[in-house]
Image 1 (cartoon, rainbow, N blue to C red):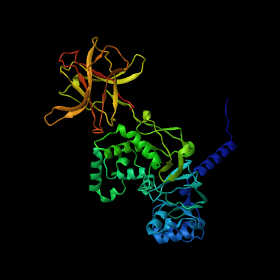
Image 2: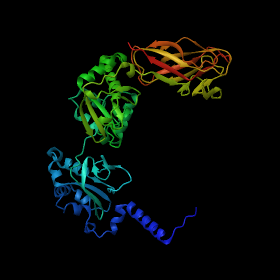
Image 3: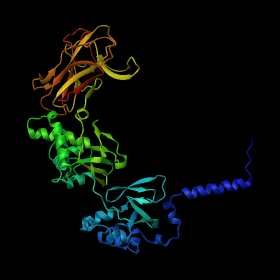
Length: 490
């Protein structure tokens, strides 16, 4: 079928195209074409002269931000009405420092109009808080009553509520130091090092600048190893337990994190407790699921009936909880060591005999493993790390695929230990018996168990896979898909 476009159709199409261009244009790009008298003033001049926001204008002058807003850069201001300013708690404007923080939380060093292709625009304010501008109509919960008022160096929106700066999650936790046991412990990790690398980070922070210490982001062991709850850029969900609930969870873990003395045991049990109560992304109460999974793989049951208080903060939400009962069966995780990820070998350069393989099992499921073959070294050993092992009995399983040789060979697992100054291997926790690796067995095989009575170097436990004590090829082969260390509940 032939389509004919006459001159009238062409005119209509041209008009529609022009309309589309106009309707999609950026108001800030078009502001210079306007004859609005506002454009003869900059933001500082405009906001200190209009009556509707005169109280906010007074604060601009008092804090010096009126001079900031006379600059040549482009700004956006969400200016609260006088009625909104009257509702601001006096504590938020108690001194010049708090007034500057308050004012800076209403100013962005960018152009943000009400027209956007995004439903929600996250805006970095000059307070370094990140606020959400929703649909061009609501800024951090404050309705916009007058949008898109342009000046020579930016624009302002008038809002019916003040944008009172919220604390972030870490600031809230610090405010509870001394009145809440969980908060007090978390703040104490500014001084205590959970892992050896924590002390290095703290020393580095002090060397760079003493001011960095006050952010805690580099110096607190929790913020370094779990989530940086001091970070304004990201959003988090955090569960803060009341004292009885917190102490109950710590007591539950203490038998599995035994150290040389009771205080150290409590410290580590506390850490392994609280690390599972922070989650990436902010989850509103109505969207909370029955279970959240921590970044360490622990399934944490969420009972909304135990929420005492919801605290909305600048980088997420904090829930004060009367109880958070996490079963030991989900808390004590199985450690799985992948064969293709060794940290070292016992001796010599055997790269020519070492094969990192990508294969499929009998069901067509892909896996990766390691095989060291024909190396000619008795007791050749592959080393692995198993971080954060608990003080309990572990059952050991492996999957070791012998699909190259027709004969059965043997290998064994050693737990713990290390080399002394003489190069001798000492202080191993257990060495399991040799176990057969028969041809073409793809099943998981139980190879023994061991017991850890005390938490040692918590992030540096050495696991060794040891070949037969023979130099004969085909006899001293090593192969490993994975080793599983399964903790036993006492």
